[in-house]
Amino acid sequence: MEKVDLRKLWRGRTILAIVFLLAFFSTGFSKYIGGEYLIGGVFPGFYIIVLINIILIFASVWYYNANFVPEELHDEVEGNE
Amino acid sequence: MSGFTVYLIASVFLVIMIAIAAYGTLKQRRSSTNDLFIAERSIGPVITAITIFATLQSGFSILGFAGLFYLNGVGASMAVFVAFTQAMIIYVVFRRIWIAGKKYNLSSQADYFSDRFESPVFLKILIGIIGLVAIVAAHFSVQLNSLGIIMQTMSNGEITYVQGMIFLAIGMVIVTLIGGMRGISFVDFILGILMLVGLTSLAVIIFTNSGQGFTDIYQNLKTNFAAALTVPGPINYFTPQMIFSFFISYTFGAIMLPHMFVKTYITKSIKSYKTLPLLYMGATFPLFILIFWLIGPLAKAHLADVTATDTVVPLLIANFVNSEFVQGLLFIVVIAAIISTASGALLALSQIITIDVYKTLFKGKTEKHYYWVGNIGIIAITLIGLVLAINPPGAIAYIVTSSLGISATLFIPAVLGLYWKRLNKHGVIAGVISGIVVYVWITFILNMPQASFLGFNATVWAVLVEVIVLVVVTLFTPPPSQNTQLKYIDKINYSLYGVENLSLKQNDEVK
Image (tube, rainbow over all chains, first blue to last red; front, side, top):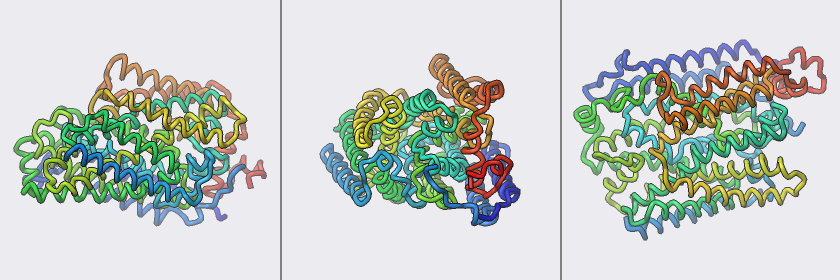
C-alpha cells in the first residue's frame, strides 16, 4: 500500500473544522446577524442561516471526500490478530 | 380511530415487520452471539447508514423534537449541527474502532474499553453497566413511553397508555428475537425510508386539509407566538449556554449509546466509511427540516394549548387527516420510527447482559448457551423498561437531553484511546466515575436536570470534570503496555494510512 499524505489529510480536516465552527457559531449567535428578522415579513431569518449552513456543511464534506481523502486510504483489514 | 382499528393496523404492521426480519435473517442466520449482535460484520454501507439513521432518529425525534419546537420554537433546529458532528465522528472515530473490532474481534462498547485499557473484568463490567443505565434511561424507556402515547392518542383514549405500550412492546420483542442484528438492520432500512416518506406526506396533507399555506402558518406564528421564531424562544430555553449543552449532550451522548456504538462493527468493509457520513446526513437533514420547518410550526399554529407536547404529531394526524386509511398509514410511520430504535436498543441491552457481564463472570459455556442467555435478556429488559415507562418524569426531549449525560462520559476516553498512547485504565476509570458523580450530583441531588451552573447543563460539567481527572490521573500513573499502544495507535494508523513510525519499524510483526 502506498503511503498517504497525512498533511494533506489534516489540511482537509482543518477546513472541515473551520466550516463547522463558523456554521455553529453563526447559528448560535444568529440574533446578532439578522436571525431575528422575518424574511418577507414571514419566514424566520434564523432558518435562512440554518439552511445556508446545512448546504455549506454538506458541500464541505463532499469536497473533503473528493479532494483530500486518497483512494488508497481504505486498506482491507485482516481480522482476528 | 376506534381502539379496534388501531389494534388492527398495529397488528398488520407488526406481522409485516416480523416477516421482513425473518426474511432478512433467513439465509445466513446461525445460532451465534456474533451473528445475533453484529451480523458477523456483513452489512453494506447503505443499509448501515440507514440503520444508524433509524437508530438515532426515532420516535423521540418525531414526537420529541416536534414537541420541543412546540415548547421552544426554532432553537430546536440546532439539532442539524448534531447530525453533522455525529456524521464526522462516525467517519473519523468509528472507522478506527471498526478496524480495532475486526483485528481484535471486538463486538461491543465494553469490549473496546476493556481491551484498549487492559481491564478485562472491572472496566468491562463498569462500561457495560453504564451502557445499560444509559440506554434504559435515555432511549429505551422513552421509546416505550412513545409507543404508549401514540396508541392512546390515535384511539382517542380508548386504548390506555399502558395497554398500548404493552401491546407494541410484545411485537417489538418478537421482531428483535427473530431478526437479531441482521434482521433488524434490514427492518431499519425499510422503516427509515418509510419515516421520511410518511412525514413528507403528513406535512402535505395538513397543508391541503387545513386550507392554510406555508406563509399563513408563519404569519400566524409571527402574530401569536413571535418568540417561537427566534432563540432563546418563549421560555428562554435555548440560551447560548443551553445551545452548547444541547450540542454536547446529543453529540457525545447519543453517539456513545451502546446500541449506536455497536453499529460501528456491523459494516463489512472499511470502504463503507467513505460514504457513511454523507448517507447519514443525506437522510437526517431532510428529516430535521421536515420536523422543524413544517411539522413543528404546523402544530404550533394549529393546536392550541397542548400540555402533553409529545402528542402534537399524533394530534395533527387525528385532527387534520380525514381518511382513516391514511391516518393508519401515518400512524404506522410513527410506530415504525419508534420500533426501529427500540429494537436496536433492546439488542444492545441483551448484548451487554450476555457478552459484557454474563460471559465475563461465567466463562467457558457453549456459544449456544450465551445465545439463549441473550434472548432471555431481551425479554427481561423489556419488562424492566415497561415498569420504568409507566410513569414518565417529563417531556420526551427533556428526559433524553438530561439523561444523555450518562453515555456522554464515555465519549472522551473512547476517542482519546485511539489517539493518545499514554491514556491508561486508571485515568479512564477515575475520569468516567468522577464525570458520572458530577452528573448525578447536579441532575438528581441538586435537581437541575436542564440548565445548571452558569447556564450550562449537567453533561457539560460532567465532561469537563472528567477530562481534568482523566488527564491528571493518567499522567501520574504508569502508561499501558507497549503491545496495547502498538495495537490501538500504530497498527490502526498503518491499516489506515500505511504510515510507518518508529515503533512500527521496531516491530516487524505488524506487517
